[in-house]
Image (cartoon, rainbow, N blue to C red; front, side, top):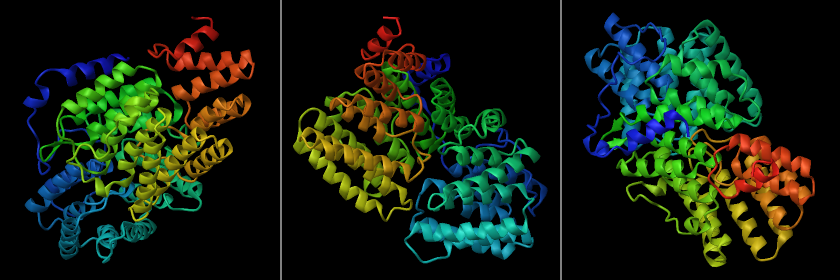
Length: 539
């Protein structure tokens, strides 16, 4: 465990910390003293409002949407003739990459803010941004993508007219990344976004949008090393912004660099705990905690992961948005599945805690059913496993209408893995292998969602375990290698490769994988590490 992680545990576990925490409401701005990098939009407002607007826009680029909304609203109240303040109020009501759906009240609020912006705008550049956001709020539709597509088109028009404006360029790149979630050729869209953001960063190296959105652009298969210099600069320009301190870990997860994942998210969680939303802990806190837990689990540091989970649960009520729901379901599922603690997995209760509106979050709820089903099939309760698979099928169907069409794909990939384990338990081994391979194809058809550090049980890791159980070690090793190519440095993938190579009788290959596992997890607490230590001559 790193020193910073130890400090985080001390802070989170301190008696009375949660009880003594004074909540900050959503309408209180964070304060201009907070470092956010450099934004110089030059809004057509009085000087005082210009400076405040730049700070709020910086927070929006950091995806601190709640805090940015509060600051934009404060400006709009004090300077109602500042058109861009009203634009900011509206634009922070939707979060393109997070697939959140504004409520009817928020849609009405956004429309009202846009009308106020239109009534006061005199600058054509500002008008182009206002019209882009208006295209999100104006349609009469329940489909989030229909709204987002209008905003994407509007940002393209704004960028075509003002390609040299750093903020417009950054937001246009964000719109490209939003488009990429549904694009047939994701690589081409990511290429364009990367090129734009690199240019902005070269011209303005402390621009928060350039760095933040570049991380999202490179948080994709095969791209993680493209922006390391930008990634490493993020914490320096915004040392007290929770999401800025978290974002570099998106790249380090892709690289399997768990000490960096742990370090950045320990810092993020400490800062995020100071941000509360109407009496609930901001989801930025539990977001960092999930990545922290994931990082410790990959190093086999299970007691640290469990302590962090306990501390987070003791903090009290968490923000009930989609990210909050996702992480509250994912963390207990990860702890059980990563440790292969199948009895605990089988006992997981879906739809907990009860203050979350679970009907709105199919994928999040599916994580609990997936872990529960995995636990059931591995403890011999096939009836419960089949129930979980049926529930996943229902959730996948419901998720087809979700704002992000990937949600249904994620659930279907998990369902196929669970169905594969059920088929294996029933003796239908070829069908089990076929289902696992289909899950792998489903996973490859979409990118990882930015809310998640990684899958509970990746398809090719699961396939490797089934093939190993079928005494097909060469095929199993190939599956583990493929899983490691996609998600490098996972403890169970590396351990599976060690076992497969040893079963295949290739001592040299087994030793190489064992050395890699010991490098990743030098202080692992699990008994399963003993095999690697013996092979590497450290037992």
